[in-house]
Image (cartoon, rainbow, N blue to C red):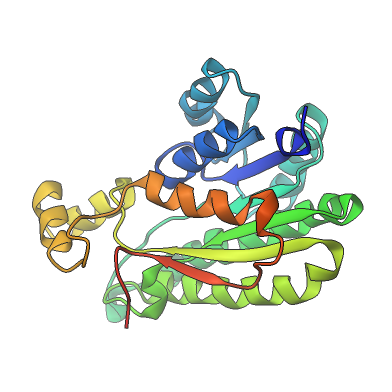
Length: 253
């Protein structure tokens, strides 16, 4: 078994959408994958896709914004699959609203999952990476980091993850650990479907309208993001760190 095949990856928010596509893609590259989501039962489909293809995977239920649960989740992964060497911080939620309508709870929920959750999971996993002298961290940012109406909380969190990523790259590089961020544009997921519902549009109509504004004339799929994450987590990407890659079908202002 090659070194690549022995790496253990942790994907948060792995039950569906980008997280599920990423977990399946990393497993196809020989990684053992821990699929973490708030509801462990929801991880079943992703885990079964991986195991049916001959891979190793485990579903873990955890609230990544809870310190004890994040630590326990990483400890369980280490016991059941091995010490994690790859972390994809993908878990996220939306609480969209215009600023004057946004509640403090809306703000705190989004900050806690995206920023606090990424911090807690990274802190728990980096100890294993430092011991191994090798690690790959990928944080999911968003094109919304550049600003997006109705998403003051989400935009701020996703911009914060870019600063977090660059700091990780500076602090952890000496230990053979890279940290990068992938910033998706419009991706067809349950999250964007929820946005369509919020603006009272049918999802197909919403996607078609979005595609007209994208140079490649289509919206993205979860697999498009999984492809970028797979690159950053690869053995050959050891000299790429502290970068933010916008995967949006064209340039962004």
